[in-house]
Image (tube, rainbow, N blue to C red; front, top):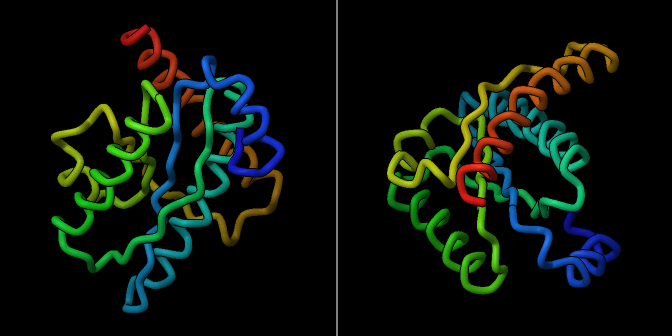
Length: 155
């Protein structure tokens, strides 16, 4: 389910079955890495949309969180921590997964590895739509196993 009025209405009715929140992390930078940040955000957006489609009825895809790549580790951890606390206390989610292509998050989220998933970014800007979809689908297939193992571990 996506963060839309229609899907949230269904979420409220089916809350007991939707135990996983997915939150994409979108990098923003206006320095030399501006294009990399935009590519990463585009890739993550395609990826989580396809992932949500595969697990509709089990996950809620929340709006992505933009963050400045130049932010300190403390600021980044505080951002994640706040979301984890809010979703744990108000959303009744058993599983909260942040997804990012920024490898720097791996060291920040290391302590909370159950909450974080790093995916290497693949630039999509020069790919034709059919190839783009194929690349995303291949990534989603790999993620399916991650989610299934995670659910089996905690269910």
